[in-house]
Amino acid sequence: MIRLLTAAAFLLHVATRGGHGAVADGDSYADFAALCNLITLAQTPVAPETDKSKALELLKTIKAINISVATADIRQALTQAQNKKWEQLSQEERKGKGGWQGSWDDFAEAKAFSKYGANKAAYEEWRATTVSKAARKKIVYLAAQAVKTAQSLLQLQAKIAMAGAQEAAQKALLGEDKAASGVKAASTDRVTECGKASIGATADGGQSAGKALLLDLLCLCGGHSSDTSVGKACCKKCDGNGNNDEWNLATDGKTRATFIAGNCPKAPGHTRISQQTVEEAWRHFLTRTAIAKGNGKAYRNALGVLDGTGQAGCTGNKASNGGPCAQYSDDAVVTGKTPPTWLTNLRTAAQIRDAAAEAINKIKGIEHKLQAINNTLGSLLWQDEKTQNMQKTTATTMVTPGDTDCTKQKPNSSCTEKGCKWTSTAADKGYFCKPNEREGQTNTRNTGEGASGAAEGAKTGTAVCAQHHTDKEKYEGDKSCKWERETFKDSSFLSNKNCL
Image (cartoon, rainbow, N blue to C red):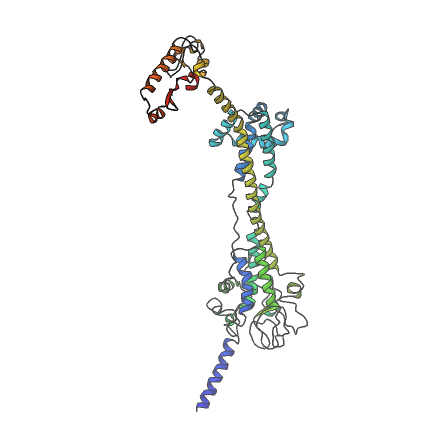
């Protein structure tokens, strides 16, 4: 009785394996993971970058500084032409301006940039600044250098838009038509499309293998009518709802493939597509296709698992020397003469993405150079102003009220420059200049009231110092006195000029 039950259980087990497939959990997991690395890269969004630098704004500012120190005839010509570009000027408007043709557009852009808001206020301030001829030459030279430095700016900004990168990634994933008619093979014969029968002498590959990553995934993991759980060979959940029935090659397999891809292991570091990550994933992929399949290792260039010799090819069912797999040609994975189409598209997307990253770094370099030029222009703009202010300050501080006869300063300007006080609020000329009410200010130089005042001050100073007697600390605390040995001297011997 026990023997009969055991035999019945064995027959039931065999029947179950025959009905539900001969693949085991994870039979193709390593191959599945290698294909998933490439799929994950293709699924990573390749979004356009934006130029967050101030390079363009700095260039416009530098051009505006340049036009602010330009000669009046250039500025007038720009105003008359309403800041139009050279190509927009009529033949009549171009007359007499031929010498400016090479720089005209830069001039026009700068003039237009300087018309509004904060730019206008800054431009007017630059215009009002007096700049020497030498400084002007330096500004013109540096502005030309800035334009030269930024020549590639627009092309670099175009690169960071990454036009075509996302499209190439989608083609790698879905096929050249981006699944316009669905993720479908060219025919309904799985062996023809996924991997042809072979005894090892040839490895032609499936007609659809290498066209689209998701199509290859279906060849590797898609369910079969004789084994609806084929997906578990790829991963534990790959035979769940979405891939628990037969993959019909005549219908759109995108939903099925997307479900399977959703179970892909995510390799660390695959945060974005790049030439480096693509080539790393491709090299790993080749290590898997290099392992021949079948018990005689005769079925070459394939991912997946096969029964027996494997000579029946990629049937989708692990039985009768066939199995679920995807086979590639020698040209695709051995010689490299004709890489998989999806690899070419992945490389295109990666190249565009890397070019954008390089462009961003170059833009930053341009920004730093333009910032340095802008800083230098600022120094050149204000250095003459500082020199003039220093000269004015020096001239003013050299005026000593004690040496000035204020009553002889008839113009208002001369009066105030000499440090005197102009008493009229209506007249600019006349006898309105008086001494400031400060100690030592005189009407005449060391005569009259000034002289007697100084003498009186000296006398008063002596009397004050004498009150300290021999108290040295008091003498030294009084700035009008001076202690010499054991006695004092008052400070009235200092000239009136030095006191002031």
